[in-house]
Image (cartoon, rainbow, N blue to C red; front, side, top):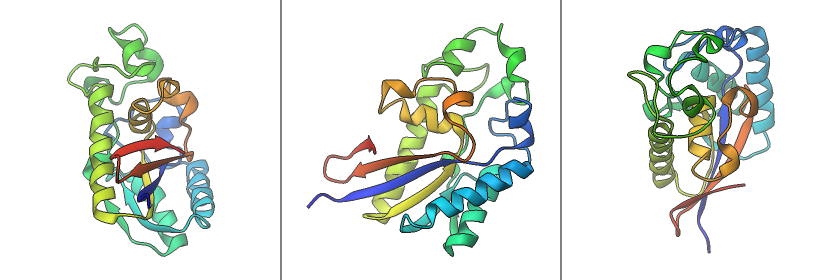
Amino acid sequence: MVSMTNFFLARHGETEWNRVRRLQGQKDSVLTSQGVEQADKLAQVMADKNISSIYSSPLGRALNTAKKCQQALAIKTEIVDGLQERFFGLWQEQYFDDLKDEPHFEQVFFQVSDKAPPQGESGIDCGKRIEQSLRKIAADKGEQNILIVTHGDAIRCFLAQLSDEAACNAYSQYGNGRVFPVSFCHQSKNFSLV
């Protein structure tokens, strides 16, 4: 029999900086009222998924989203540092539209490559970090349905390893509050999109 861990990768609710397209990376800003609604809706969507564990990035926007799910599902949230957003180095706190003339802008935001913002993390390295965290959770938890509350670019960088279609702008495809199901097969040690 095939042993699977089913992950539901969820992006946190909208924040003040998301609304104005200001790059957070590993900095933080608070959820907007819409972001709180998205977190509540995420909790509702997860209610019939037989979730046994919730893991979250330690960043406030993800943790606050996870706590909404924790309240609704009555499951404790565990924090995993490896689930943080991609580290955008010197570009953090900058407005997205102000970065368009920077070297490697296209490779950083529209591809998943080895290019990184100044003093930041490449998309490939971010994807590997998320994958490592998920592998450890799968090894610890076995055959369970697990909610992962993380970040848009972190999800994009990880999913790019599984599908060419994943390499696009996090602002368009990986919207706030969206969920991306992924399974991990313990026999093959591979992830697959569901």
